[in-house]
Length: 125
Image (cartoon, rainbow, N blue to C red; front, side):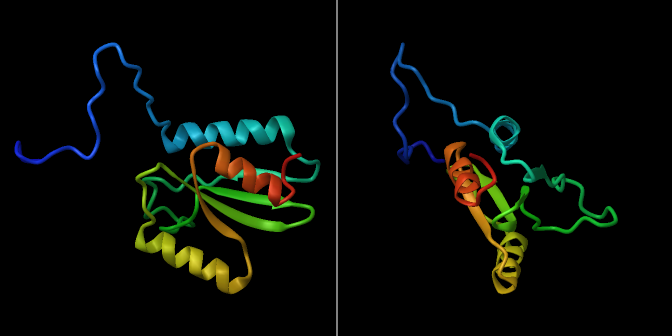
């Protein structure tokens, strides 16, 4: 950013609290912990360890962060993003592939959105 350009956010004033956004990994951990505490019997929420692992057999660019299984909804995928995070080309392709196959694949931001989706899909109570 050049010195003459204004920032798109105001700098905090001295003594003002600054809210830091959790990382995708922190949100992922919180969502899985929530499922462990409130998961419906016969359901599953599992992380897909695909970050920085491209080129390894069986891994594919674009897979979403979480795989879910529920007795009522079946399989689904959740991609976790920060407020500024965007889907990659491969993630958009994966989401479209899931859509064509009738498999739910959603993008969620923050901690509350994925938990609401898990509740809607019957994975947690």
